[in-house]
Image (tube, rainbow, N blue to C red):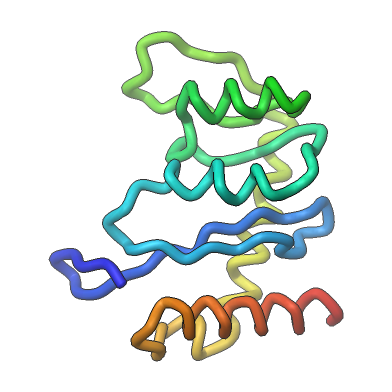
Length: 136
């Protein structure tokens, strides 16, 4: 569990399929950067045609990893980036599937309020909720 000025925090990182169902989940401390969770999550999965992510995942290493696997990165450029990469804005609109998946996960009060003290217990609750959402 991470600490910030607002208190203890965690982040849920997820990979979704084309129907907005979670296929890989990871929990990290809130102060840790998002990019650190991307490679371990994606490397355990078969390569998709494209990978849409937000600007927090804009890194040359991730882009190179995706291209080497034959995946088209659909990641908007961080405003502080010096060399901009083109991305498909139409394909990026499908990233709302991930946001809707998080919204469905947070319908579960235990996930939204983070009652669990241990990260492994919280990740188990998130996985359980994702499994139930998969079939509904």
